[in-house]
Length: 231
Image (cartoon, rainbow, N blue to C red; front, side, top):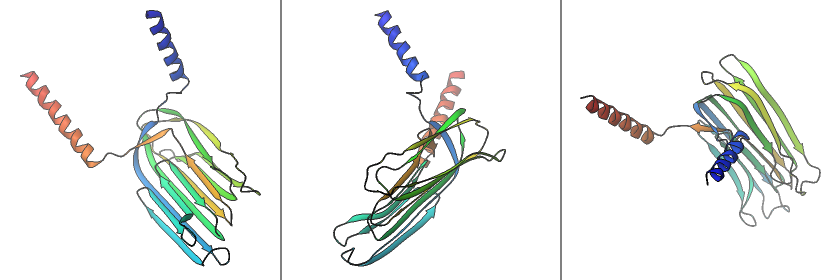
């Protein structure tokens, strides 16, 4: 039994050492900015009726937007989403459709990090999509990472899988400020364009007022217990 327990612990430590159980690093968000936009047009006879639509929004909290054509049946023509450490854009079967999303976060890690993995890629066949990723150390004004890319598929109906991954090797310090920005854009003409950028290595710590109140009450309670214990 002891030997089995020892072997189990050894396997768990090995998996942890290989980062298979690695949890995302919590980061304190100091500032955020999100932006989404899109536009689409379609003329007869390609559509049941002519339509033209657009959307645009920006702000300090996660955003999403979409254009839905109901000429034949409700289907999404363009959409984009900007969330914490993830942005995506989608443009689909219209005469002309375009969607883009961007976001940036100023943060400081709550524990030391030595790397950051960024993923970018399509989820299926596409026509044209592009992206940009940038990471800057604001404390020392050092450009850590700046990468752009694009996909262009001459046969957009083919199912392709061209995801890419970037591993940024850097010593992230808890007393530094960093700015990470993602931007994606997708275009389509009677085809499909789709692209996402994301990282699973970071998780935003944005305390809600109720959480802060509970934390404060807990600290007051601990202080009171400690005071009575001293008496």
